[in-house]
Image 1 (cartoon, rainbow, N blue to C red):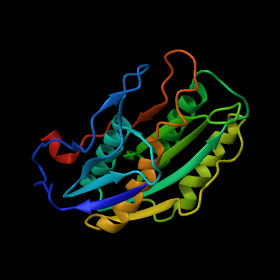
Image 2 (image 1 turned 180 degrees about the horizontal axis):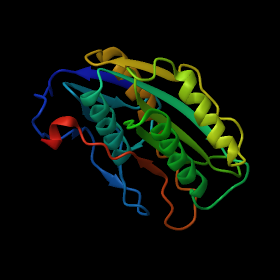
Image 3 (image 1 turned 180 degrees about the vertical axis):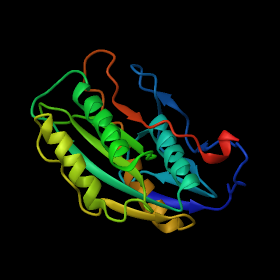
Image 4 (image 1 turned 90 degrees about the vertical axis):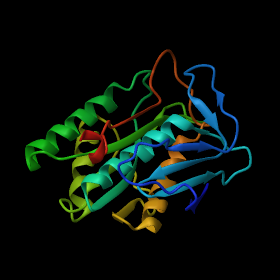
Length: 226
C-alpha cells in the first residue's frame, strides 16, 4: 500500500468537512454492509492522504480507514505528540466471539486510569484469519507522547494483560512505533499507512454470526466539542 500526500484537499481546522473523497465506486461486502473501496482520500488535520493499493486487486474497508483517520486526528487535536504503537495479538485457541479482546481493552483502560489518572487512549483493532485455524488481532494504540516518553512502559502493560488471559506474548512487528509531532506530515503518513493496512478485506470474514471484525475508540476532535 502506498500513501500520497495531496494538498488539493487542504481544509481549515475547525470546519467540519467530508473526510473522504472516493476514487473508485463503492461496493459492499453483502454481510456486514461495510463499504469496500480500492482507493480514496482521507484527511488528518490539514493533510489529505490518498490510499493506493500496493498489490493489484487489493481492496479495503472504508469504515475502518475513516475511523482510523478520525481517531488519529482526534488524538493530535489534544496532544502535540502522539505515539502510534502496533501489536499483533495471537490467541491460544479459536473463539467465535471477541470476549477476551474486550476484557483486555477494559483492563488496559482501567490500568492506565489507575496509574496515570485521566488518560486519553485512541485505538483501532481488527480481527483477521487467513490460513490459520485461529483468529488473530491487529491492534494500533494511540497514546499521549508527552505522558509516555517511551513505549516500553505501555508495552509491558499490554503484554501482562494479554498473557494473563492465557494467550501468547504480543508480537511487535518491525517499525511498530511511530512518534508523531503535530505538523510532521511525514511521520503521520507513515503511521496512517501502517494503520490503513489493517483495513484490508482479504483476511476478514472468517467468523460466525454477528461478530465484529473491528472496533475503534470513539474520541471526538477537540474543536468538535465546542
